[in-house]
Length: 295
Ligand SMILES: Nc1ncnc2c1ncn2[C@@H]1O[C@H](COP(=O)(O)OP(=O)(O)OP(=O)(O)O)[C@@H](O)[C@H]1O
Image (spheres, rainbow, N blue to C red):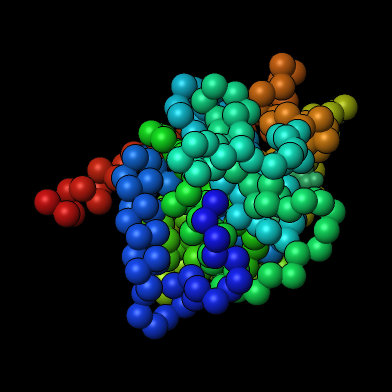
């Protein structure tokens, strides 16, 4: 990984780009040209299941035969390594490029956590350092040819989401919310932020959408239901799907295996698998629409 962690390089924070940044821009461009669809998974509020959506969608797409990269840019609370049961630092190849961790043949992963010597250590990075690290995780990683790059970002509209959108302008945003008002009000800010940044939005996902009682199979709307769909309608966005609250998701996360890859059937497994299919179809339509507009 190239040296740029002093925070002084600016990382795209305005001013004239240095020669080093121009070279990095070229490397980013060349990396992104080899990736067909870029998905940016974001939310307004923490803990709504953004990383669970990222990991399960990535794993379900990989299980369908797509080549998938998963990039976790949440420096303050990276959950992807835990949810996938991976740890340790990343290897570097002879050309000084980072080699992503292989989760399985079709799924390769890079997490901000791999930068930390001690994963339990608090990170005290300022904006330019985060910007620099995220840019390097695109320019200096040997992602190769991918069908999908799934980017899991921290909640809100801070440095990390802004850097991802600036670095990957064609990233398709997937907005994750839970049904209750406290999450919906934060996600409205995120949608306004995406619209302000002119980022293409693929649609909205409602997670923790009702709980099916494992005994009587009655649905209980613990956090209410339907708020994500209403929100999508209000903003003229596509509603991509609803994932129920399901203890299988927590069990899978603690085992370090995405629920979609567990042998056992569950409501969450079915919903995440269906969501991945909907996202793949929506991404394809979005790319086709963009190429029609550009011709
Ligand atoms: N549909 C679900 N059913 C049950 N538990 C869930 C569901 N989705 C997520 N969880 C659990 O909720 C917790 C938070 O999920 P997750 O880490 O995916 O959220 P996040 O939005 O990425 O959080 P953060 O803001 O910390 O990045 C985890 O323990 C996860 O297993």
